[in-house]
Image (cartoon, rainbow, N blue to C red; front, side, top):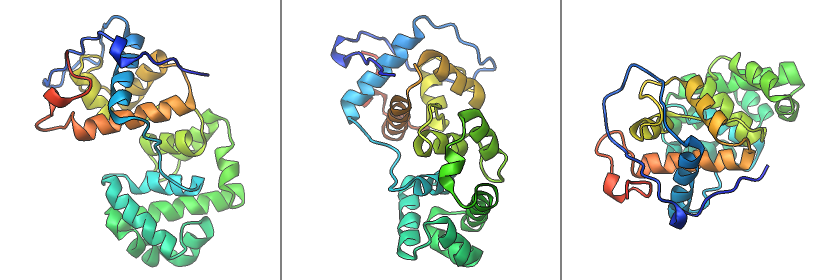
Length: 244
């Protein structure tokens, strides 16, 4: 499905961003939500350009990155993945052969390396036991079955599972994170205490399902969050989606 994106120069959306306290209610009555989300995307895309996220040379590397990025910056994940490539561990067989201690040392830059090495090995063992060592077989499943299977694995939560589904399996599911909650609650579109499933459903209802667009939209949100809509001292005046 192709997604038509309005040109930022033709958009007259008032974003109304405010840094406010969390609200108890997660309900919002906001008119024309699809148009507002489309305008956000267009304004961010005009500023950052195509981000071509998620970085990774193979589907397995993408899945590994989704686990390694938990509670750390992507720059640290890049260092860990570089180590895995250098040590020839960036395959199911390579990780299993290396064992937990060597794997933990290789991914040390990503932090929580003992826990993450166990998560990676659990993931590899599951691929071998349930799918004969074939990640492709795992990822080829219908989206509901794939998501349920991933979420059943120890150490794989909704954001990690959905990142694998969207970027490795190329199936349309919207990935949400702390940036998503912060930005769109400040815009007044969702509550500050909105849960993962409800926030994801918000995007599924108002943004047409398209794998490439979902991936690029998520990337734009991440970059707006990192560069402008910071948790402390947000750079509102310079933000590409600011009130004009």
